[in-house]
Length: 343
Image (cartoon, rainbow, N blue to C red; front, side, top):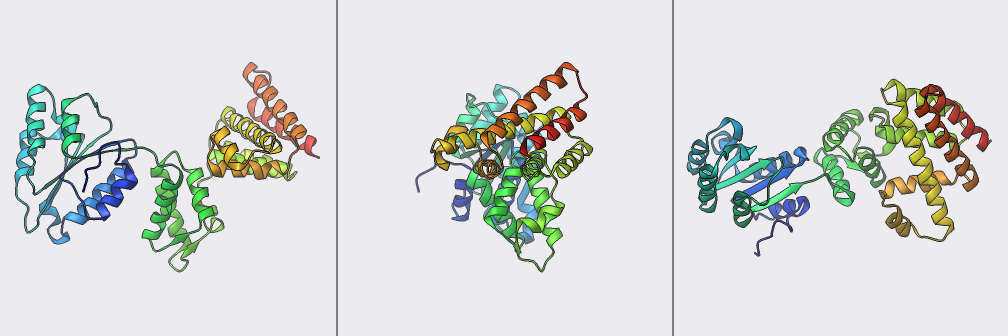
């Protein structure tokens, strides 16, 4: 099989390769998404190391706490009743303090024993360094960036599937949009949702998990704009108060309100100009779920009403920044003005 280069091997491709049984002697995992790195490491561990001898053939060490010579000795030790020994080194660059240690480690990398599967982990890497080039040449390098689009949707679906649950596409999209900035938080919410619905319910929909999901600012702003569009001023004020109680900044709430009104306005203009959804997405560079929500909300407003609402919001922003009015009161008055325009 032709070796995949560092540019070829992303998270999804790596999963497929491991599942196919094609495992390498050397991996370098780096990037911001630690939860994905942990998943891959555990997957490799379960694939290569028998459970009954797991502790003898699997080692997780911190580079900053170990000596390079000890790591090499550990890696050279033959596995016990197994074909492979898995050695995971977190913050492996801490082992390389000077040129001599880099050369020692590079020489070892280039002559790895066949019984070893070494996984090197780092938050960042310097691709100009000799050690990086040696790792790239001998093994697989994967940068773990935040998942997006279909990759994130599949990750969510697999998360539920692993627990014997199925989730509909609409709910997966909702979760992806709501928590797409933090996989750790998303994972926590999925675990809470699975616990909440219980063992008996296998197919999960959005209504099943909404009661226990943390209401993020973005989702609450969706709900607030929905309330305004439905001419429900009291509900809009209630949602605003909930956001403030949760510790959200008034300035940030206003920013998100302005952003959402502007997005709805732009979507409505593009639709009236005959653009397709795909064209709108390419123009505005927004997540499909966000755009669909904005387009749906646009059904409750005219361009004239949105223009008034946006002007009110921008005037409110100026008044708050000048200290003319207290932020919470200013946003309440804004919601009242918008409601009056819609009535």
